[in-house]
Image 1: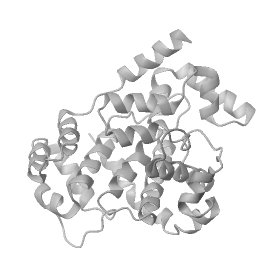
Image 2 (image 1 turned 90 degrees about the vertical axis):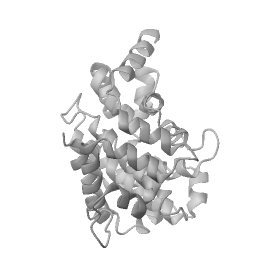
Image 3 (image 1 turned 90 degrees about the horizontal axis):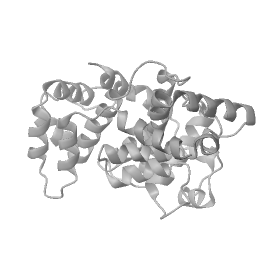
Amino acid sequence: MTNLRTNVVDAVERMPAFPKSVHQVLKLASDINCSQKCLVEIIKKDPVFTLKILRLVNSAYFGLSREVTSINHASVYLGLNTLKNVALGLAAVGAIPRHRVAGLDMDAFWLHSLSVATATRLLGSMLGVSQDDVADYFAAGLLHDIGKVVLALYMAGEFEDVGILAAREGMSMYRAEEAVLGTTHAEVGAMLAARWNLPVDLTDSIARHHAPDRGTSSQLVDCVFAADQIVKRLAFGSAGDCVVEPLPKSVRARFGLDLDGLIAAMPTLADEVEEARVFIRLGEED
């Protein structure tokens, strides 16, 4: 297991870094004294990234009533936190290879991730999270399975063994990873999030998205966990795992609904996922 642990650390280190501008955006956005003007000036220094953000802001996903023609205007309409998460989402998608790796179909993977992001955002809204803060929920859902990409890219043989064991035993990939690797994609994803200097709450949601009842209770973690089960139940995309885990008592209590009730409470999910596909298209563009 020592060699495997070393391999996991090495795999995380081999993942592409974020552009300098995105690192600066994340650093600034975490500073309570940061102004929108400071954030805008950083983004404007990267013309390609600026164009992507403006195209996203003007897409059906945001549904603004008028065209936004500058990052300054975008920051006014969206708010600092949403702008930060737009930058984060586009950068994360851009850092991931587009081709199939170790049996992980990237188109299906991103559809699953995007669907979990959308469902997490809807669940946050149901719990009264503000329009600006709910952007954190979308980002957490989008990146929850990022550790699988690390394993598929840089520990392909072991990751394929995980898939074989999970399929043969009818178990979740999370459990199969523990058996084969002695770690999980959740832990690996949290390691990558720390390397990318992502916000603490986001890193925590990646680390615990299969174990919401472990550690301090977190509304964000509960939403990501529930969203993941909803999307697997509805079979929107696939991240290699179709096992739907039961909602812990604490998660059911938070929403006052079981899984079927939560699905019934979001009838627009499929349509909103379709509108959010623009994240993937723009993130993958060079």
